Length: 249
Ligand code: PGA
Image (cartoon, rainbow, N blue to C red; front, side):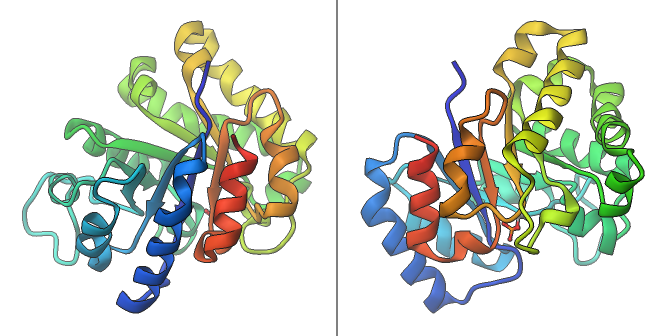
């Protein structure tokens, strides 16, 4: 039985003041939520978030990391640094990083490996663009993105990881995939893993992301292969994020 998981992706939002208000609010109400909950915060706020979520059920995550262990990589942040700040999770391959920072499938797979090497759970983001969907390439694109990790690290690597299916056209646009559209891709992802190892596939949590809101969360999370959500905009509003967490319970 896979435990549902809802993770907030704050992206480049927040301030000391806003984070305090948001996390205080989440902490006050999260204990009545049955799913696993995490927040992925900007690097400079890791220390603040770490001290605020300590002792609560909220897990801490980052939004990116370097594929390198250490060295002359100005501006980069390593997995072991994230570990020192108590990160349990890190997003890898978010579509904004793939599209705006040129992260290739190979780089994303290397980041996935770097996270696991220090015991951080990578949340591998995959998803097709609107043009790719319209060209009927959804299955092919998602499969290729997943294969990059499977080919580099083997199926066993997926045991301590999470996958997030985020159709690019649904991110921040208000255009959510229908539960049926999402389920179809989630099933394909699980099936691709199952070809190599059915037990790992059965235990793999696959989150949906892309304009998840309190209004659509329940129906999405009710799909057989949707194990929770990766939440952007709605994760910045405590009441909305909590409502989405409750929808996953
Ligand atoms: P959104 O973002 O919920 O604002 O669409 C999701 C994400 O990018 O992770």
